[in-house]
Image 1 (cartoon, rainbow, N blue to C red):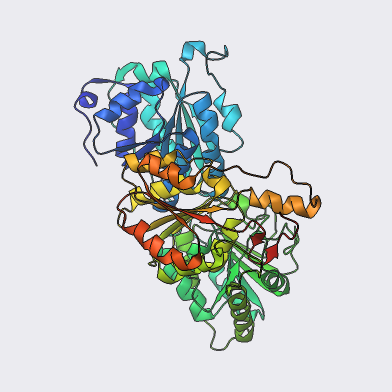
Image 2 (cartoon, rainbow, N blue to C red):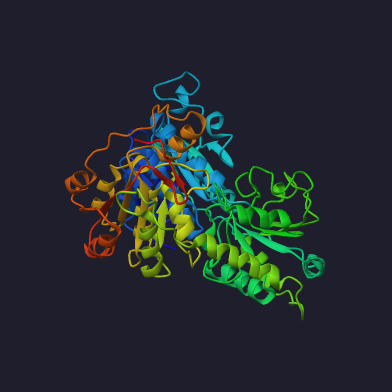
Length: 560
């Protein structure tokens, strides 16, 4: 346990110091914030804790995204501090991402003094009402003496069952109040494990299948858990499809990899799900995207037999009624699966081969359109796939540009894909900054569309200030591509609100002190990317792409 300040070891202390002592006791080594006067006492207490790294973002939304990404990478709650009112509303995007991505996160929000609560005081918000629908737990700490208790409970809540976000409101007078010094409470760690009696039935159901398909997803997959799962899949030779933006759980180079249950899903993969006679869902919630809008599996009783393993009992049977439900976190679930004895003969080997061949054809990089101008994004992602080390971390936000990334880049290791399953724009750069701070020895790349990057471009200043040497690839097609694609389908030729008038991205990055280049062709990209990696500071590469090439296989013929 890290040492605490001499002041907070005295017989009396303050709420702010007690709070920081509680963070230290629970293993926190980094917090992300935008400073606010509503929690000055916490900032003062952090001054005495050199063992906690304080990363100051330039926007509360970015700070919350950084904390969420840190939670994804560590499996421990990412920590974010923001001020009341506007700070809290800005940071709410990180809470929503953490909820839908099942990421442990604790957001500490300043609050008006307790004597002013309920009067709509300056910047006052009712946080339980505001965050109640997207956080696992929301509470106001109205008694400084209870800080150790409530902080420990927040850590336990954020990491238990299905991980997620917790919001703690901090009234100013509670943080400044003198209170008795107390030992910090440490949250217990407990993971749900499967009922061992379920193993024989699980094995029998799998062994009797003819067209089994594994749907893999969920959060907090350690290297050991991913290794156990991979060993199980290879021993049984089962085809595996990863849920939306969960590709990094399973090595995409293995022959059992069938593809990605994504937006704009590969039609052959969708047909594979429909044709399966048994679905083994491991870790995933079986949400809208993975099920093709709840059509590939029909609720409440799918045509396919369903085995569902999930950490949260409330998720089992919530949408789909499984034939076998097993409550288990990822690690014990993977250990259970690895322990299943594989059959001597398998009826589904040809089925698995079919899945692998379908995916290999889909992943082949197509030639650019005959009229295309600018850089071919498929060739760029293919180069990253060939050259990046297995432990490289790729971060992205939302937009059609991500279709190229998720289709042509093969993820190899857990916790190398930072991508919001809720489809939040702007996530990539803040997430990449957090990743590089957490793993300074690894290559971290942010792939971002122009609209996505413009959500938080100011965070380049954060990257420079805190020596986070990320490489940012900005895919510039001068529009909100996803919205334009749907707009052209529904209202062809009637462009409205989807054009972008962009800044000079290279000049913008240079103004922050970053390395920056504009890349005009796929042939020029490898050398430019190596210069960016070798720069020793944050770097940005702008790629000008043809706005008519809206997806790898779709062309907007009517675009001028």
